[in-house]
Amino acid sequence: MKKIIILLLFICNLVNAQVDSKIDIEEIIKDNLKFSTFYAAVNGGTSLSDVKVFSVNNGLSTQTISTPYDYNFTIGLRKIARFGYENKAQTFYDGTESNYSDAATVGKVRGIEYMFEVNMKRQEGIDYMDQHHFIRYSSDDDCEDPLCVNYFAIKVEYLQDGFADVEYFEASQRFRYKKTRDLSFNIGTVQRLSEPYGYNPLDEWMLPNNNLHYTYLAIQEGYTIDVQSSEYFAPDGTLVATSPEVWEAVVVPEMLSNYVTKKRDELEKLIQHSLVIGFDYYKYSKKTWLHVWGNLMPWHYNDGSEFSYHNFITEEQWYDYSGGLIYGIKQNKNLGYFVEGKYNKYWNREWYDFKFGVNYVIF
Image 1 (cartoon, rainbow, N blue to C red):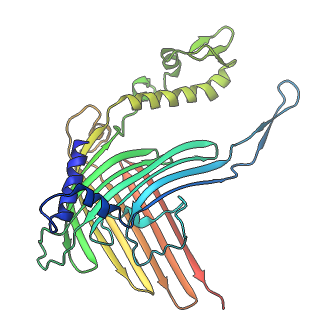
Image 2 (image 1 turned 135 degrees about the vertical axis):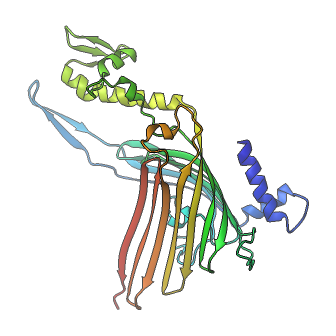
Image 3 (image 1 turned 45 degrees about the vertical axis):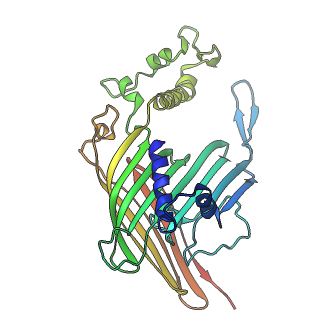
């Protein structure tokens, strides 16, 4: 937390250094909240339809499985300059917006941009908590010297993605070299704080034949097994299975999932220091536009800790990378097409989304 506060104060100093040698906190807050938008919205809808399950164990019986409605509660604050290809089609932010350009390293304008957004959602009966917060600062003062120190980019980001099961805090500091007005390259360092990815709590329970000693693990976790009567009890004494088949197919998987989650939560977060190189390209006209960026982390510092990711891979180093592409073209007054997407791969965990399509106006 101390590092975050120092970094944020450093950014504020940069913004105000040319205006006044004295730091006016109230004026800084006022300037950076100007033109920002606070939004809160609730979205909902029908989930999966009811499913009837039939059983003939004790005569024909029917059970109806209902899935509760889907919902998405979003609350956020954002101040991000729109690129030329982005139009605010809606009057209000409704919490369903997904702007690929938010993942870019460099913003549209010089200065501070930010987004703080929390999503509490339920989809197909499963609850998720998603968060995405970031502050980015881009410097660009038209300095003619290619090694001008005023060309740099700073980004502080926190991401929690329930679907991808990934969560981390990331801070990067980069020097930018502007090859042309549209193309720039960057190099710098990245610090990521996360759980020890790569660690598998079940490894210590694996037998020499690669089978899992799940029965002994269940007993250690407080489950009770009465082999003679084929009764299986949860740690709180609840009867959870009356046959080996139900025990292995239903109870054991749930027990393993809870055990893995518990062991992962017990570990402290780890910080990973990495080298990063990247590029940004943005060119826009009313008929065609291209925005593409990429980041590669080819080297990671090994601090020798017990749960370092270096201990869970066969090679000394690995590649983490991310990127995005936004391309659109209006072929003529009738036809246009677009491709948009972003991709991330950290610690061998992937998350991505994309879309592409064609528009044809008939008249």
